[in-house]
Each structure stands twice: as C-alpha cells, then as structure tokens.
Image (tube, rainbow, N blue to C red; front, side):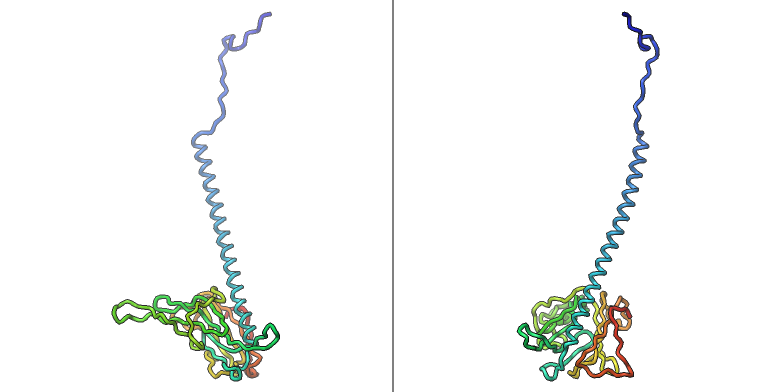
Length: 257
C-alpha cells in the first residue's frame, strides 16, 4: 500500500507558525503602569495610616484631659476647710494645694493633703511643662533656671530644685505625672463675686476653673491669648461660700473658649 505524499514531501512551501511574544516596549510600558499604581496605593495607604495615627493621638489626649478633670473633680468636691485640719486651700495660676477627706478601708475617715500642678523642666532659658502631677502629702518640685557660673561664661544648672509656692516641703524624689499629654494649665478661683488668679486666704473657694491645653504656651504670651486648643471645666466646691446670685458661676466641661 502506497502512502500519499505530504505537502512537504510534495515540494510545497513549508509554513512555520510564529509564537506570540511581548516586545520590549510593551514590557516597559507594563512595568511603568504597575509602578504608578503601586505609588498611588502607597500614597493612599500612608494617608490612611497618618489619619489613623492622628485619630488615636486625639483620642488619647481627650482621654487624658477627661482623666484630669474627673480626678480633680473628685478631689475638690471632697475638700475640707483647711484651717481646722492643719492646712488651708492655697493656689495660684498653675498649681494648688488643699486638704480633702478620705475614707480609709476600715471605715475611719481621714484627711490627706493634695498637691496638684505641672511638672516643670528646664528648656534653654525657659521652664517648660512636661506633664501634670497629682501628689498626696508631698510637694511638686519646680527647677530653677540656669544661672551664670562665677568662674566661666557658661550656664550651670542649680542642682537643688525649688518647690512651687504652694508646696509644703522640698523633695528630690522623681515625680510620676498623672498624664504627660497636658502641656498647658491655668487655674482660677471663684470668690463668690469674681474670679481670682490667686487664692491665699486659706479658706475654700466656691469654685475652681480649670483650663487645660495640649500645646505649651509661648513665653511672654498672656493666658487670654493662648493660641492652642483649650478645654475648660468649672468645679463647684460644696464647702465653699455661697455663690453670688448676681454673678453666677458658669459650668463648662471639655469646651473650647
């Protein structure tokens, strides 16, 4: 049996199918498009990550602010007249000290001395707030600014810290901050007729206005011109004098001025 000749064998032209392939220009174009898409995705991811970080930081600051307000409200509302307990109410624009009642675990009532104020640190030629502290039966040390050394032109910091004007005794023990998120603090005291920046007569004021901020105040700037976001709360003291009806004390909580 004879086999039929194939086209190749019959002398017909040989056809070769070329395999499909990408050219160099097509490969470079695809790589360029992929790089652009990856860059856009990375920018979008970075923006989302930054936004998430800002939200978390804002939440931590708000939580710290509310913690300070709630802690001070609990302390001030249990403040006792200081003259009868060996320590009156004293305060200035950034710190205060007072006596408060405390119920012991066994049921016996006691009195504890509270000191509240900023933690200071030397920053060049200024004092900067590094946080807010609350201490019981202790003082909050306040460092002094560096002074020129007699033997040289350089500045040498003073080793022994000075305490705030409200402090009872100096201490060199490290102070653990109640929070380090707060960098601005202002206190005012309601006498029943007007707000005072200082309370020195030992009696308990009718109320205390507490203003907190996350950013430090610039040197030389008045508290009324504070540019940062501030939160204010007024805490009424039950042991204080009766509030004047002609000038009522306004209650504010976590509100910007």
